[in-house]
Image 1 (cartoon, rainbow, N blue to C red):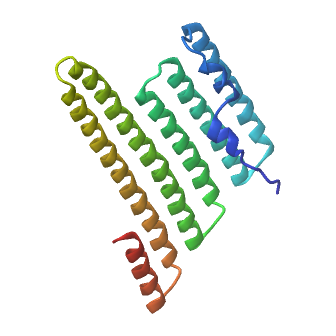
Image 2 (cartoon, rainbow, N blue to C red):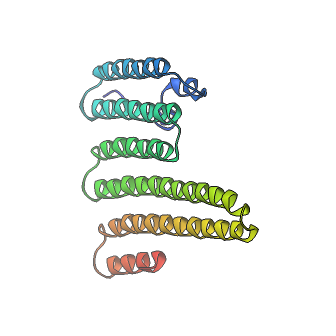
Length: 214
């Protein structure tokens, strides 16, 4: 069977057009042109998958779709920049990586497959948790900046209050992300214990709970 090597760069960076769309003040015509280029490249990538078969072909198709999704979300984020658009682009990357990882798990069986799936989910949780934390931080900082600017016209001490509130929200966002990632990692560790039995399995689960604070 032919081997198919997934390009991590394709899923992490997106389409080659992503660099071009970084220009400011992109026109609507430029946006449409880039979108058509993304669609065209997807068709080429998908057609190339026909040279494979079985799960190798499935992985190829999923990667092509993921590459398209990432490129489109990056294009949107550059066409209409916003905190939310940047977050959506990060989520698109997480979804693409997850879809490919899950498809690769189909080559495994039994507990190995179960662990593979849990690890894929954990990786996605990590990526999205970090993206959410960053979005909350950016929102808090943006709000603090506006509040701080308005406040100085009234009293300088209010500026400090705004910054303090932003710092508190940033800390909460990081705490939430840490909790979500720890829970996902615990699920992976627990799944790995399922291949064991008896006292060995019990100890494995106990150690996992202790390590992840469960």
